[in-house]
Image (cartoon, rainbow, N blue to C red):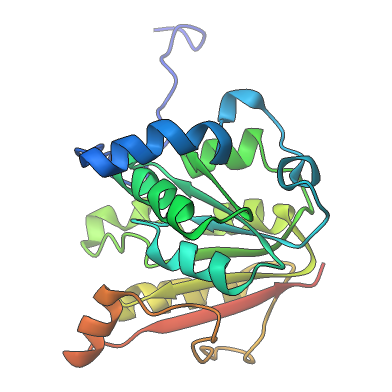
Length: 231
């Protein structure tokens, strides 16, 4: 087979696509509210000032799950703009429901692959904070290449942060926390806010999830890493 005819290698996915089944409420909220609160990759680069109708620091969360903590952050910090990216439709449907119930005007969401959204939609130097909370740990050694936090990816994230912007990671898997620390400590252009090789205390702005609280009751640890863009 010639080089020209060789098939393109597929990018390794950092998630398992579980579209799941939306509840009637989630589907109704999605159908009604995504028209105004949803963003689409097909629309290309986004102008946050235009989307939100104001100039304000913008926080991006990758993989917001069912959206409870992201909605809570948007409620607690109305002075900030929040954008979430989640590939699973039930989570996006629930976030649309929570946004509608709270009357949020500072929250938008993509239902898409974060890697593609970052590549095609998020302008460079446009974000004050990027959040990646409890990503799939892919705990089996043979699957760890699928972990989202890798050297190449954190440089993509750095390009989207404004100078001084923060990449905030959190995990409840100690091995993944160690992996994150190794990747971030070696990453060019970042500085650990807590000091070299140190994990950060959980910041007040990150709500504890029900899953996290249950884990803490069972003695499970949670590790936060906050790294600022310095170049």
